[in-house]
Image 1 (cartoon, rainbow, N blue to C red):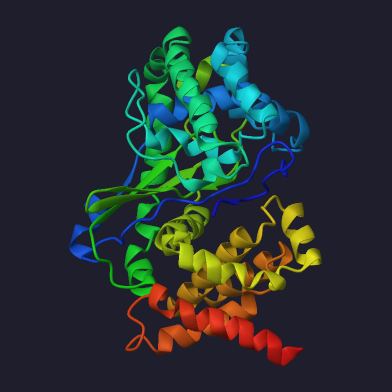
Image 2 (cartoon, rainbow, N blue to C red):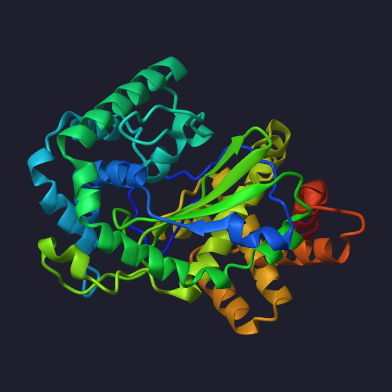
Length: 390
């Protein structure tokens, strides 16, 4: 599921989602690691992000959540730079989707399902989070297809390619900052914990200044026998004040934070590994445990900007607990304590129970080759443990 740091709560207008399509697991061959993990900016993501920043979403973030050193300067710059297009049909369509309660934060990764501009044709099916509404599928498709067409018009009319090319030095600085932190992303630990992968998967980090500070997403795509795990990330901290015309002069873009990137990449890629949760039988098992989703826990989770829907809450518990177990295996006790404290403060109060069960899983890998194989036991133990405690 999507994870944000200091993310604003906008649940009434933007449905929080992070569901990703089913995907086979990546190849565990460590010798292929340099090819498996890459980091680069993406003009598709930039174009969609610019439209979102011009829409009510961007306006809400900068007007409501700016404080102190956190001023969302990139978003403000984008809104100023493209102000002449604030009433472009693509932006109006984004506002319409908001009014229909269809637009959500997941649209920041909407571009990964499409071919490059200027064609921008959908080449992968949208994940289920884009259809989580009572509106008929065909009606939703009409809205999304119209949005695609208007995005193509925006790309041309607003000269997004020219903007991207003119500021290439700026985007290169972002890529260099992220690439310098890649060694801290431990793919071997992920492969080892979640289980032996069946097919080759690539890991792609897409940094984007159009994303609000601390926003992160982990969609994944299946393409035949191959798949791609994405980690889309906004800046980890705000940049210093700058003039809108001086982007290429910025030498510290807000993405150089190796500790943050290591933790968040582990989290977002973790969501890609657990896409087996999208299987109907898994959803049914999760739903039987909805009694664990206490109202006070939901309230706290919402206060920190996460969706209180039980399937999201369950997945967040599973991924966050997995992170903590992995950091334990790596011997980082300081990070373990900090993450457990922070995640519980954010409302994930079932973490200790999940951690105990996942540590049992790590001791019985001869019986459970991967996490999916252990899920039936985890479901049973969560259910039985609750009954015994009553």
